[in-house]
Structures are given as C-alpha cells and as structure tokens.
Length: 189
Image (cartoon, rainbow, N blue to C red; front, side, top):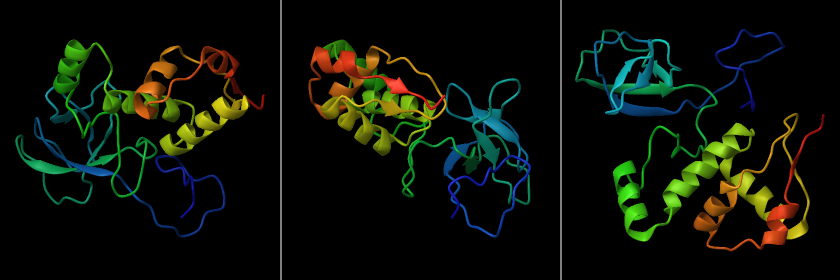
C-alpha cells in the first residue's frame, strides 16, 4: 500500500491499484443522517452534522438507508487523521483508557497529569509535525541522548514547554534541563 494516496483529493499523479485501511468507530447518531454525510461529534459523543465546524469523518457511505437518531453506525474517520494504526487505532476525539472525567479526578487528587492524558497530548503534537507517535517518541529519545535535532520537513517549530511534562509522565524518565535546552526541531527550508 502506498504511504500517501491523497484520499479526499483529486489524483494528479500516476497512480495504480492499491488497498487502504480506513479507521472506523461505532457511534450513535444524534440526529437523522444520510450515508456519506460529513459529521462531527457533539459534546455528548453523538454524531451530528458538521455544519461550519471541521468534520472528523463521514457516515458509512455503503449504507443503503438513512440512519435514524439513536441508531448506531460505523463512522469512517477522515484519511490521515488517526495517530496510530495497527487495527487498534487512536484518535484525539476518542479516549480508550480513561475518560476526561476520570483524568480530571486523578489530576485533582494527585496534582499530576495522567499517562493517558500525556500520551494523547504527545500523539496530537506528533501528528501536528507529521510524525507517527512511535516514530516521534523514538526520535525524541534519540535527540535527548545525542543532542541531535529532530527534522520536521519544511516546518520551523518551537519546542513547547509542556512537551517535557508529558514526555516524563509517559516515559517515567526525567529529562535534565541541559538536554531540554539543547533540543530543537529543524527544517529543510
């Protein structure tokens, strides 16, 4: 399978037959929805029309009927939006290990971020700079060890301060201040 087919875009280069993975998740319709409709999640987690907000995916385009409010269906997530894929994927809109409420309780009791919350933050950051989570964590560990930069393609990126809090929460490793100061993201510009 090609790394980047450009799904959701007009084909402008030579292409051949291929196969793809599409991340899907069962969700409940918060209103009547047609197959192929672009949707987002409501604050209660139900699928609703995206309107002016960015859609996270579409209603199963292979359905042969409308989905009624309250019915469960497959939500096809936008291409390139998931942050990990092994037929067990992650996506910022869906948290598996702890709910937001559970994480808030842990934060109040311990005063610390939880690992799942920190992992989610790191996954989102990695996706913003066009890295997979595992690849980013490997690059980050290598950069801390060697003092090398992390190459981000054509993006110039500042190292956010909260990166270290989340990295330490996930890995359990403390990063010395001198190593924090040496890390930088470089571009090929």
